[in-house]
Amino acid sequence: MQLRTVDSFADRPFSGNPAGVVMLDESPSDEWMATVAHEANLSDTAFVIRTRLSNADFGLRWFTKGPVEDDLCGHATLAAAHCLFEDGVSSPIRFATRSGVLTVSRREDGSLAMDLPAWPPTQVDPPAGIADALHAPVAWTGRSGNDHLLALVADERSVRDLSPDIRKISRIPADIVIVTAAADREQPFDFVSRAFAPNLGIDEDPVTGSAHTVLAPFWADRLGRAALVGLQASARSGLVGVELIGDRVIVSGRAVTILDDAL
Image 1 (cartoon, rainbow, N blue to C red):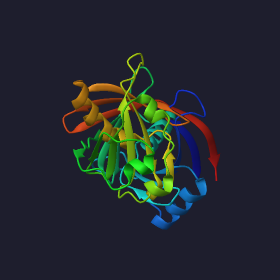
Image 2 (spheres, rainbow, N blue to C red):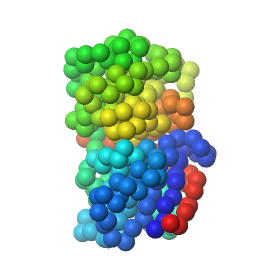
Image 3 (cartoon, helix red, strand yellow):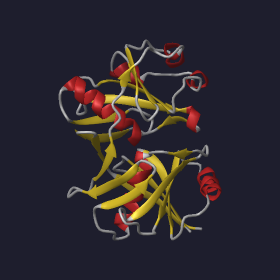
């Protein structure tokens, strides 16, 4: 078995979001994949199954270190595609997943573009205790169909300075709580965000591809542009390109291999 560690949404080592990637010839048991993901101790591990399907080139599943199986994990998908491209697989790559067939293409500049479902948030009343959990006033809240809760705060500095109570966030009924704001005018990106997922075993996720399937339609509507760039402002921050196309969103970024181990 080969286990690689890849930093996704990163153009240099030890930044962005690390993911494990395991290449397999056959589909193992769920228990085995959960155990490997827990042992890898990364936010997510992608399991790529080489069995060719009629509508896809590979199977792909994702498990958190929790361990919990994800319905969609953007950064681990980016990492899996990065490893396959390094191995000489041609672009584009089609993955059969729990979120349907996902296609990843390699662009001429070396970045990778993932075609993912868009999940526009619908405005809801703020969940009880969210402002207290975030230690920040919340101007708007919305919930998406993939069980992400989006919370809009005043400005970029509010997002960067967040010091949330993770225990209280875990009481909010959502897989991931995304906090966002428009970027300051002088910035080379359009919006900022942070993502907290204690209910998935991840207190704060460094850079979250699935969160941008919610952020893209939200900010495209507010800013009046389909193509945008977001900064996820965690300690290992990363830039994420998004382009809303109908009910899909192209989420793009770079990736760097950090470790390559045969187990």
